[in-house]
Length: 191
Ligand code: AMP
Image (cartoon, rainbow, N blue to C red; front, side, top):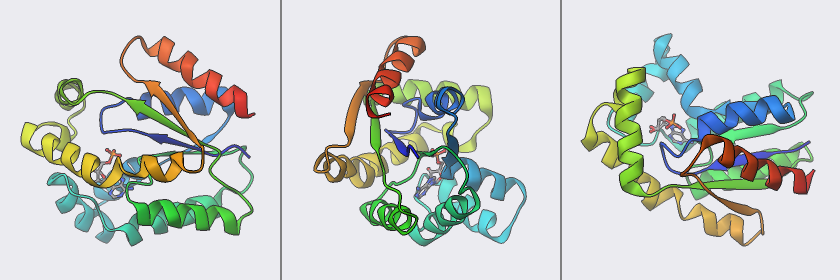
């Protein structure tokens, strides 16, 4: 199995690159943001709780997303590997992911870190908000909150993974095809 974390701030292109990776390497895409948006659309109890936090640009509780990841791993034992998108976002989540994978004799093989500067991210997210109707992409204040949450809580995880020699930093600005090629090189190296 090949398990990849696609890491980076909101708007870095994690979703776009994940789509390419699942096709090329036959991986299963697990995006906690996508799963939460389905819960919201279906107006489940979890969705209603999450909606309030998401609309303010805050994180949903660790236990909630860890539970979602756990059931996705258990339900998909036959896949060639996972691509984790938007998860982990805290050190607690990263440690939980290691534990969940370990319980299934698996591990994180690579962390692809898409780096993009803050002003470019704000531009991209506002554009995505216009095109997609995602409420958390519409308002610049919420976008700035999400980026603050990213830089305060999530970005430090890079150190956790660097200590394990798992990080490949990829320039997330430029042609999508060039970024795809850079990512492919990294994955082909560990295959
Ligand atoms: P995303 O689509 O990954 O940008 O996620 C959208 C929103 O869902 C985030 O701003 C958070 O409010 C919530 N969310 C998604 N993944 C996580 C996570 N791993 N931990 C906490 N909250 C999350």
